[in-house]
Length: 89
Image (cartoon, rainbow, N blue to C red; front, side):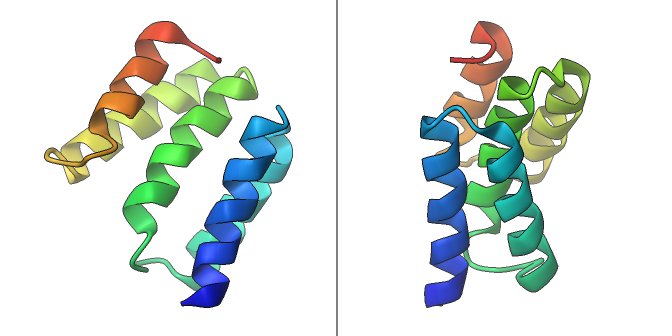
């Protein structure tokens, strides 16, 4: 839906602006409104990046491992794995 996409785009924009708190807020709103939405996979991958940007490495690692288990063939998998190796951008 349009609202679902807007929340994902808000999170992506916040990450580009180095504002992980705003990204995490948008992602939490998305999770609340669209827990199994069409963009849940993208949401979960962005969450890993936002947690890393926020300096929450332990939470990011846990979220990444959960993501890789839930979506083993995801197109976002390499980005999630790279975020763990490389740390925040």
